Image (cartoon, rainbow, N blue to C red; front, side):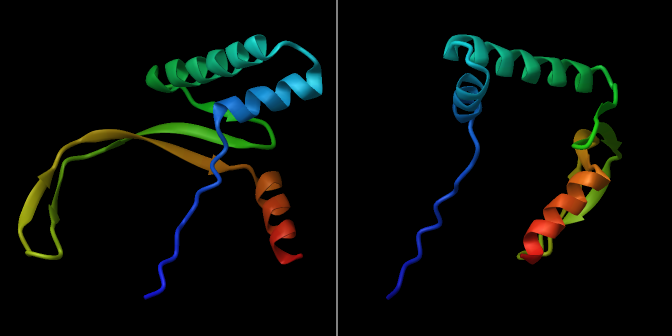
Length: 105
């Protein structure tokens, strides 16, 4: 039997901080603080129902979903799905073009 291990190559805060340190030349402690502060600002702005638009990157929006009835496809039982808030990310058109141009190569 052949098993395939799926290893993720996720970008981590530590990796971003190391990249900032090497590109800008500031200490790693400061670059980690910048990343943490940026994430904190994003979270607080999203929680206060503000739209965050980052030019050439995308837009973060908070969307409220209504209560609805869902069904488990395995046992066909119906469940109530409560009302909730979700974060939506819309990619900027320039980033979308850049991603798709790299995919074709």
